[in-house]
Length: 399
Image (cartoon, rainbow, N blue to C red; front, side):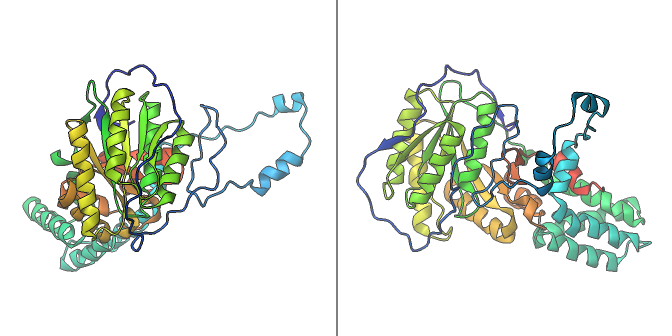
């Protein structure tokens, strides 16, 4: 869990977990280019520590399946009957298989299509490469990454005098793993010894920034770290409310001001709270208006400067959240945010809902940015620490 940073010794628990409100003058707002993120209607009921938690998206609601209702209506069996007929135990699903299932749409459009292509071929020729190129581009590897991958494959085939199409699949697998697990994509972060570890979370509206922050918070809490949340997206009241809901769910403190406040002022106050409260981790939510807006990028630069002035070295991580279903548009977002504030890591959400998982290789190869997390479902545990080997094996696994 959270293998992207080295742990430090836990500090004493911090007193107080209620959201903190600061009164500041209301500034000008620009709502013309903003979209509302849906909010959960109610926080979920508390769950026992050993029970898997269902932290779903706001629109999801639990339903009791019909078979469960029927079972509830049937009379209980006697103790003798229960003893004589033990319930069958379900086989635990391996981590690799579960991830492979989550990536089923990408596998169908990528790995399975490759298998079907190679199955009908007896030799490696130009026609095979043309059809393979179409599959790779469709999987959203991008033109540049696709051309580089095929060029490397051609050189390998010529050098080793290969002719079996099945060997081409292994070459592609190795090359993809090389893109994703290259030296520049394995940058490890370490928590400061005596100061909070500050994560500035950026990305456009609708990609799941706030939900991702909530799930990352849970990961840090499980790693026995104290967490402070900061609502620096002050342009929408909904964004502030949603972060507070996640604060209540995780039972952590939230620093927030009213809608329209200066985001930099919120961050300034939050840094003071973080230092005085001896928090281990600070997660800062930021505005996500259209990434082409110059004023948003200037605002993010100012927030970053304020963090650094208040706490040397902060932010220690600038985490960009990208919706994997946006494909190449997500790459454009990454380039713009990286140019503005220097992105140091990426969280890819909704990877289970897209047939274009090749975006992982494109981001790591073209931008030299490490993937920190991948979102492959609605539950809190479906935000996974990214592991290149695990991802490639799951993508190429056949059921």
